Image (cartoon, rainbow, N blue to C red):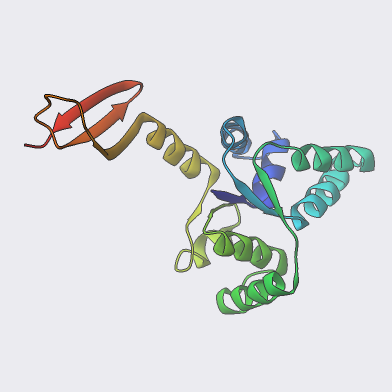
Length: 179
């Protein structure tokens, strides 16, 4: 589960910015499966306003915000009184800007990883939640795809295994038996 700061979306949409390719790859990967993404409704305002300013085109900003709204896996979180209170607490405690505190509160409430390019979020929030840059989050996702480990009970007749440890690596399944 993720909360993705506006900085990542904006970076992905501006190919002239450093790290844009990594942000694009991360967003594509997240929305291709899709993973649950908890986003404050504030994201739509930020995307629309920033992109309208960057491209000097109001309609383009609004259109891109609508496209983000429709992405698979999005779970929209309104800024209600309880979320505002949590954002205020996190913002004050970790010295965050207002909008950054809202993203932190959403991630904290939903136990999601906050993916951001914001230096203050990256430096100040790790004591309270998992915070990653887009490339780090992408590498983490790719690593979990390559290696998935877990216990499974076996009940095949004639089997000497009561339990097996299953290791799945790139569609190859290996079962190790505990005797």
